[in-house]
Length: 343
Image (cartoon, rainbow, N blue to C red):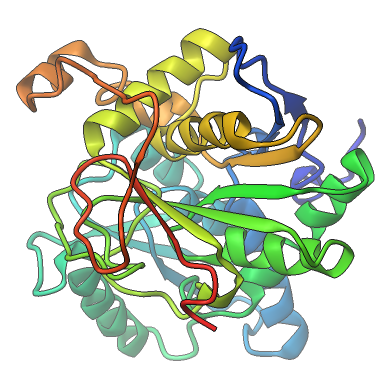
């Protein structure tokens, strides 16, 4: 497929039916390989937000772009911003992996690493540093991935790709970090199928769905210490939480069973979609959005020594989650039916 520019290579990612290899799997699970964008799923958001800002005049020619991120949004903003001739500043924290840091610096991005955790985890400290940079660079553009409506809008195209490939999606399973991918994709899919079931996947120790914050959680790419306004809770029917060990175990299973080398967001989504398939009627079309490649996690999830040092050597993943009531603290793989809770 010829692309006139690297920006044209964003989107139109493969949709693959995964094997499952389980007799009890009745529903059909299709993995949307967003990890095969140039840098990852957030390339869509960066392209949508930055082009929209340039079109509206919010982002002036040559003005710097500043964003807070430790992962794929940072890479997406650097890709799009640098290609369009802007200086890009990324505010991150010590959890950034060496591969992502190498990608950012190689693209010509300026990386600012905060050195201490704030009252609301690393995120709050990063945002404080970002505000300092906004004052230092008047006229700078901040994409604001957690609250910019262009974030969920960026996934209308993803939903249309799914409809073109499958005709109809019955269940959507997606991780939640900024809220854009799940909310934007679900909103668009519900136009053609109002009965779409939306399953959100989160990490234990994330506050997005009312759990207490645990800033020391090891998972990256999903979960948050703040509740992003781009999370449209009203669209969601069911929420799952996996702890670090379970998410890591699921990620290793995804690589071993399906030959998809991905990060823990994808692994957690895989585990939940696989379970949903067992609860579904034959022929149910379940889409699992896999956002992140595994290269960021070679020194963590895929490193035995790292897992042992953090007490994750058993790598246990239950066959099924435990159903809990709203307000119950989830310590291991658990889910809650939130249909109508946020209406």
